[in-house]
Length: 144
Image (cartoon, rainbow, N blue to C red; front, side, top):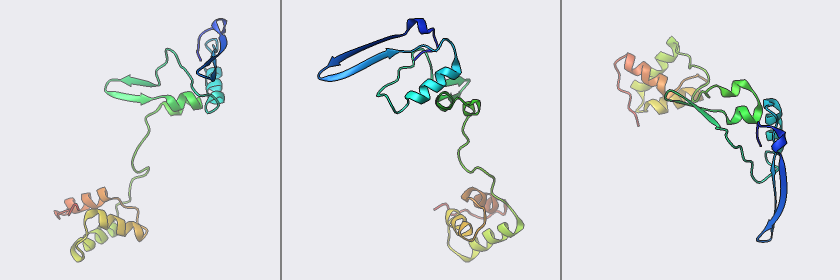
């Protein structure tokens, strides 16, 4: 596959060690949307796709951006870095702080176990939040 001219398209069939191969070059004449449609169409239907001259990641400074999804889906949003970890910030309330501190004093749980217990009770907490609350109150975290 190529974003280049379709004038260079070529197809040939051959057999090697009893296995039949079809090798084809398909150009999309600079049409990025056609390139993306063709890539999605062939994905999973062919054994190999060659993307000559294309990088599936971009490097800017010390950051690397994976654009494989953008090529397969054709969506500009896929060019943005993916956020890992929690998708929303845990809620730190007075009630959550009190439960964390009570758990720390009344049990021998680590910050991970306290977070699991509060999550089981329906509170949106993470071990990191538990650790922050304990540190803010000058309490040890008991990491494990």
